[in-house]
Length: 341
Ligand code: SAM
Image (cartoon, rainbow, N blue to C red; front, side, top):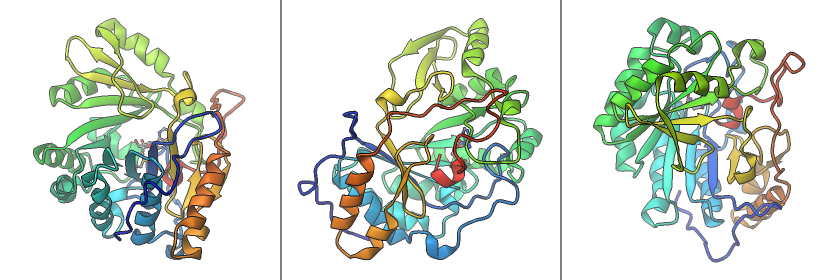
């Protein structure tokens, strides 16, 4: 697991629109211990083990991207912390942070396993994590996640904060589900010194629900919130697509991720790799490149780098998500748990 980074050997990855690829999101497993209604079908089928990259292969793949200029690496899933022995991968990748080749190693988690892993994450140089919490109501939490236990997630968040991790809360805005809770969530998150980011639900995959029932434009949410709170736009950036405001009354930050009402493709610096080594150059497009075959074809990384170059030369300008009465189905067939959110 300790393949060296060959920084000088390979040039930076730059797409046809001049955007450098500096942020890689890697889904380390398609499995999850929750079944969020907007993300997965309840009877979701999972991939056979042989199709999934080993931890050593994931390390090689991530390291190849680091060698090409990726500075931020986010592990996600599925639920990254349910992947067996995932901390061995985190520990291996942390060498790039220690060497100064990576600015940030982070993860997005549902928090269910955080109480177990928070200390070790800090030990591996992880400084910030995103935890997905859509509601503070335990019964509603169970409904949204189908299988989740809010108390366990809260205990995980407490453990993460106690271990010294900066926690950002992500909540998907769902019409008629959590839309009246955002004031409480702001008070809760900011009261604990955590940023909160709201996300528009995206039409990804067939999940057995009508997207028009779930979709809540954040332009509407923002207008409503500004009746109670004083929101000031701030230039704060974390390398992702969120645009932030500071709330004067709490002194905390609130982010908006608006792939539908305000597409943010022009500054896209990201690509995503699934746990099978499929590279998606855009979250909202079907085009993809297989990196598993070149990875497994030889011990050296030349074939892999050639495949990365070829794929990045096809990175599209952007996506065009639409959810309305004429567009109830998914924009792409894969769910977020496959691509890695
Ligand atoms: N299991 C981890 C978690 O819950 O954070 C990581 C993977 S999950 C797919 C990552 C994020 O994607 C979560 O915040 C989830 O709410 C969000 N997500 C899933 N499906 C989505 C969709 N269709 N639209 C918007 N966000 C979605």
